[in-house]
Length: 233
Image (cartoon, rainbow, N blue to C red; front, side, top):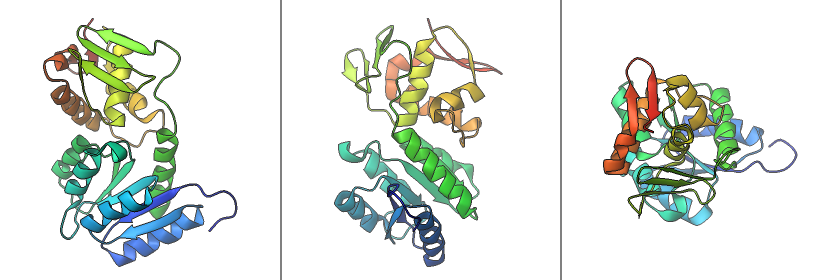
């Protein structure tokens, strides 16, 4: 491990021993403590027991698959905001879409560069350590939708809505400038806090998921065909 302060704890939930060894070596070299679990159930138990700072999660696991693990982690208060980087050997975009809808923060398709994965881990941890609030109003209201950036809370018609970190950043960016049309690459910037690994088309996935969670209030997010999205004013 590199000298200096520990940069954080990363849990690898991956059943491929070769991949685990490569990632363990590269992450440890960069100063991370590395834990591992070879199946989904043990992965969830390890999260609860050790409270890692980030999870690298393979989608194809024995027992509970990666999507179920992601669903479980996002459904619990203590792990709702835990950064999750998905790994998938599949080429089908549907797996990535479902994973992002469940709240994964980023994904990589096998085979991948260990150096790039390490860079994405660093970026996700930096983003997780920042508050979403930037200069501007901390409390935003559009119709019956209320967003409190300081408390990281969203309410629709007075009822709380649980959003992932990416969904929260996306909504906050749109609600800051009602009526202003944002191109997809601008929204990627909002979601990733300027450290973009997410491709433009995945903004559509986040918007779709956000609309579902907001229910009737989701209509404030308006599609501008051929350009991007805006928040209705």
